[in-house]
Length: 134
Image (tube, rainbow, N blue to C red; front, side, top):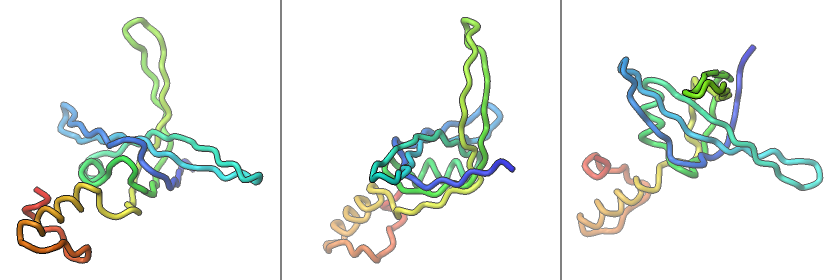
């Protein structure tokens, strides 16, 4: 069985791109921590790839520092560069991504701008107006 479950934070903003065949792919890196018995902490960094609709959602709603849970599988790719050198990359191909830290910072900024335009303070319980997010 090839299954990976990770919980961690994004180390950078996701990178989304469209392939020639029309598929969407988003890549990002997740940092996880291992807590050792002597009070020490060890960080690991994992490359994560998402495809199609999940890639679009991750590209739109995730940002650096977002806390997420990833469920997927490990995949290792191999290729040769122009000089003939072989390269390998091991990554997690996500089947499910759960956002654990709520909305992105820019969504809160959009809410504050919209509330200010309406003449009042932003209420965190109010939904973000569609025109402020667009």
